Each structure stands twice: as C-alpha cells, then as structure tokens.
Image 1 (spheres, rainbow, N blue to C red):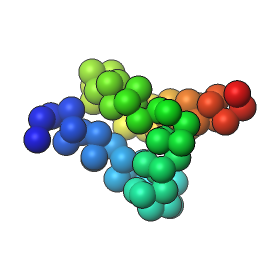
Image 2 (cartoon, rainbow, N blue to C red):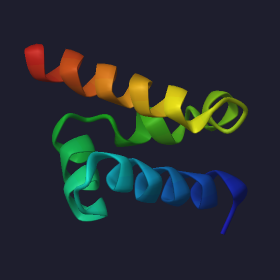
Image 3 (cartoon, rainbow, N blue to C red):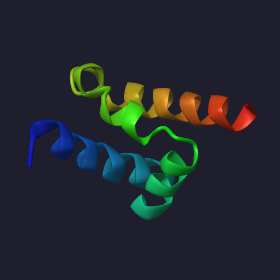
Amino acid sequence: MNKETEFFIYLLEKYAEYKKISTTDVLNTLEQLDLTNFIYNMYERYHTEAIENAFKDIDDLIKEQKSN
C-alpha cells in the first residue's frame, strides 16, 4: 500500500471519529458527491498541516457540493 492510500485511510478514520459517524458513511458521502478522488489527491497538502485543517476543508467541500 502506498503512502497516499495509507494517509487517506487514516484521514477517513479520523474524520469519521471527529464527525461521530462511521467511515462507511464518510466514504459514501464522498462518493455520492464525487469528492473521493479529489480528497485522495490532496495528500501533499493534508499530510503536512494540522488534521483539523483537513477536516474543515472536507466540511467546506461537502457543504459546497451539497449546495450545487
């Protein structure tokens, strides 16, 4: 498994914990909103900053996609 995949799994688990929902629900939401690949490809940014910043960004991306 590559470092991007490992981090993506870690991010999903921590984000689910932060939101108090299952990782399945998180992944389903990202899939439905076509955000999975985008967030996966944000590895370079997300792994170098505080994870809370990634959480805020994910929240903002979900909110933006849901409003479209």
